[in-house]
Image (cartoon, rainbow, N blue to C red; front, side, top):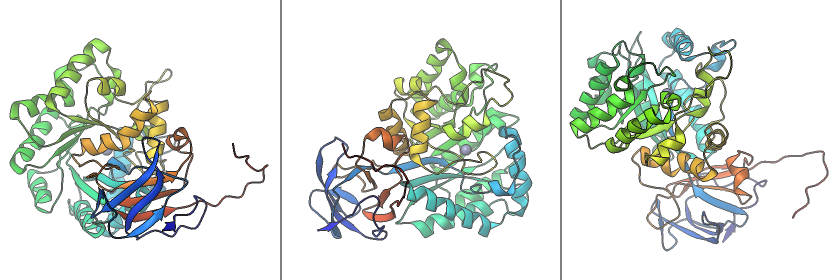
Amino acid sequence: MRAIGPPDGAAQLAGEMVGVVRGVRLPDGTLGDVALEGGVVGVVPGEGAELDASGWRVLPAACEPHAHLDKALTAPRVDPGAGNDLVAAIEQWRAILPGIDTADVHARALAAVHRYVARGITTIRTHVDVAREGDPLRGVDALVALREQLRGRVTLQVCLLAGSEASDAAVAEAVARGIDVIGGCPHLAPDPHHEVTRMLDVAERTGLPVDLHADEQLDVTLPDERFDIVDLAEQVLARGLAQRVTASHCVRLGMLEPERLAPILDLVARAGLGVVTLPITNLYLQAREVTHAAPRGLAALRQILDAGIPLAAGADNLRDPFNPAGRADPFETTSLLMTAGFLTAEQALAAVTTGAREVLGLPQAGVAPGDVADLMLVPDTEAGDLLAGAEDARIVLHGGRVVADTRVHRAVDLPLLIAR
Ligand SMILES: [Zn+2]
């Protein structure tokens, strides 16, 4: 048996297949072993290293349910000044997009994936724009190629973000080129209902799952039936769609009084939709025009959970015109869910792990036999420190293989810490 070593030791495990992790702190708080076999948790050790994990805790690996890898890390190319709202961010992005080619998207997306994986994320659903100028599908091509290149190390799902100006022919061609999920942004279209209908027509024809940018605005003066999520839920029920359907953002829901919100959430639950909340980006983009007492750009998270609707949380944009900040860290998201979204620690952790996998229609990861062996080892400290993002050391497994190993050396000119 080999010791994993301490959180401030040498990172040495990337690329290793692991057969069993022994003496690790399990999610239920006890110490135990986790046997890994053929990419899933088994009952006996499989092929690979036998690791002594004293001093480490195991969690399900995280899942980023909503990224934009085609836009990631473009912040140095723009000047957001005092900050962008959604419309200003879209304008900045459209101004630089003509100069972005397939190789550029691929290189930045891979750099972003390095960050996500190092911080414990083994599955990423990325949206991808249909460009107005030049080859409309160069982003799709770059990310579909990256998905294939990374297979076995990280799971990428490519979701088309077809704006209303994307032609039906371009959407059909994106399906042919291998996207995993169909999506659009009806709230930005001249006729949102037409866009919801157009995307669900494609979903019905192809069987692809759906993930729409929905209600990413705080204006609630429109009638309920014109909310994207209401239209989406009604059409899913009417069509009897069996595939997973997701509404991302939904910040309008956070602006509704309880009596108006309740029947909408009841409808969403009956339609079986999942909701994705994206705190860091929507806190950045929303309510910029408000002079004081600004609302939070978040969906009604506690009410969504109370209604039994699956909830996933992610970061959305990563250092681009839509969000100049971000660490690609699920624990940055959990921290915001607790402070700005008022979720409990358990609810916040579920939203970036089990809840995110449920919304994306993936089998669960964890430590029970049969679970997918996508795991994250973190220092065995108080759980609140982890969710606050205070711990940097992480060992990340995808299908039983170590895909990232981060240890942290730090020298501090202060009195030594006293073990308690
Ligand atoms: Zn988005």
